[in-house]
Image 1 (cartoon, rainbow, N blue to C red):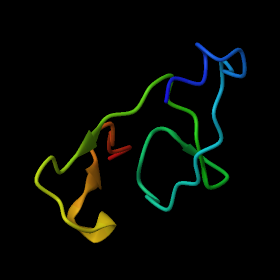
Image 2: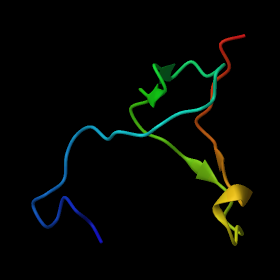
Image 3: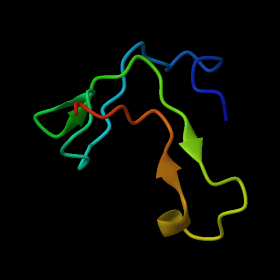
Image 4: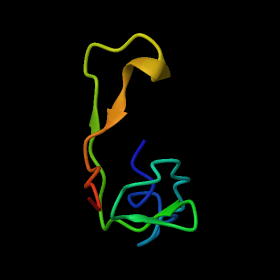
Length: 57
């Protein structure tokens, strides 16, 4: 369901992040403007991954 269409969308989202080396991880919260999730054939969440991850290396 599109939350913005129903008038309850927001411009920021709160996503927990456990990727310690990610550029977008700030105090265990994702600060990316948008995220992509890879795993189109996934049957369970453990078969997905954050495709927005950018290493601070």
